[in-house]
Image 1 (cartoon, rainbow, N blue to C red):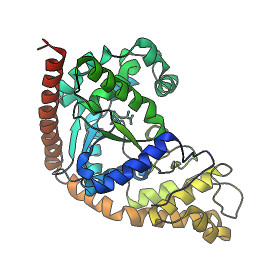
Image 2 (image 1 turned 180 degrees about the horizontal axis):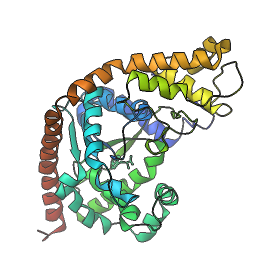
Image 3 (image 1 turned 90 degrees about the vertical axis):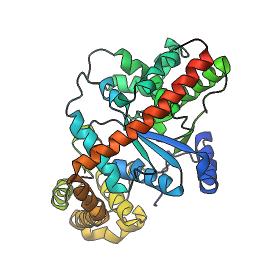
Image 4 (image 1 turned 45 degrees about the horizontal axis):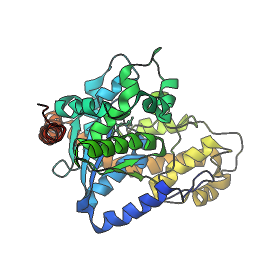
Length: 355
Ligand code: TRP
């Protein structure tokens, strides 16, 4: 996989060093890890998700790590009043995971709202954090600033604690995250540590596994995002992909270079092609050079369509049998419920007298 180091990346931060150490342990003793990761079902997963996290999930699964994939349906309500089109997005998330190679006999896919005992863990967990701590969380502050609601709901304010329940219900000890999720993981670690100190050792203190995936830009030169109409969905077909890339923003300079700061539009396209082709973006840009935007766009379209063809074919195949796709989620929910109930029993026992 191509790694792009930019000036703002600090490869020696403690979190990065720890992640490198964890990668070595993963290769040696994958069975010691239980990974919990998840997405909010707020839209179709896109190529930014694929290169950022999804294909890492398959890698971890194939290393022999036990992986839990959460469809965070309750979290959809953090920044909107209604969960519009939820069933469609949930189906889509499960389909996407099957299409990229998640194997439901090894990996558990489940959704929040189907696992009551997981959600119940939020009550004791809320008692372990202060309101001031919740208010200081930079990622929550940022999400509040960008929220589409006029006031901040209690669920928005407390969702890092909910996320602690997501991770700790199955005693997940490794959480693949981007930099922006680190404050949440800190809350999970704090909850686990305080619970263990107060009531006895029940929970692991999970580690973050930072991904080295570069940020993929959308067709408008800003971060590829479900909500910005600038993304290429995993479920898009070859024609739609061609159309989206054709409409992507470039600039008036003919010669193609890879310069993410100075030329976000062009560089986003170069990076996308480079990721699909497993190549270095600088070399690829140089090769296109005076071919300009036309050659660049042709290269990107071909690269995306070739790389995604097998995934799209599998997705279409699974989509013919939605009864099977839904049975994958119900089986995952069954398993998650058993685990959550066992953990909740332990919690009640440790806290003494709760039923
Ligand atoms: N907050 C994550 C997001 O918005 C989704 C999520 C919910 C999650 N619970 C989680 C991620 C637990 C990792 C672990 O994408």
